[in-house]
Length: 119
Length: 110
Image 1 (spheres, chains in turn yellow, brown):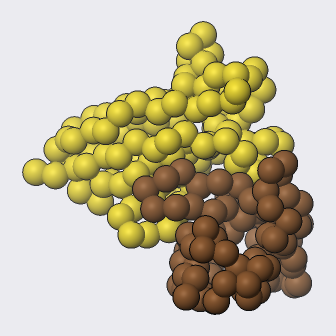
Image 2 (image 1 turned 180 degrees about the vertical axis):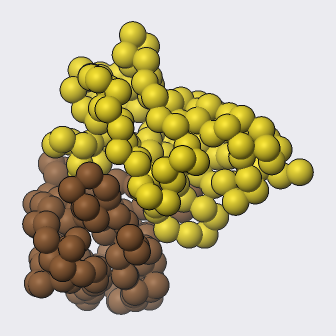
């Protein structure tokens, strides 16, 4: 069974750094791109970027370029989403998703990681 | 890149058909025949229900169908059921390497 399991809820302060994870199982992890998607409270889905676990090649949305960093640890079948300077506007539910054909569409999703940034 | 445009809400009675539109431009929806649609219940992860405009993943009800005309894609739900009450979002490529979602549509079964 294909599964993407994300790390748990985070409560943090503005200016802090944070890294959340997404561990894949039940499939050949390096074969499928992983995308990250943000959903602010009461709002729609926003595609942030994606990473090819085979070689760590990345694409970023212009809206998120320079604000977040995507990485992967193939040995642990795990993808990461990282911030170095969190803002209150980063408060959201974050999903990872597997890309079916060359990174799209998204056939399996993680359960989501809720991040709250508040002073 | 701007988000694709969807109506904020659509409602229908049980048994009816409803259609949700997803409007982009010639650079995104008009340029790629790979629109996908996702169903999402509150607080849950989205679920792929349509890909490549009109294909359904295994296990997805055939009451869901997709189409595209010009710069607008559409999702039709036939025989509306109470369990269809959820948020629906479209997605496609904005450029050759970046993806775009629509703003999402809340479907209410009245």
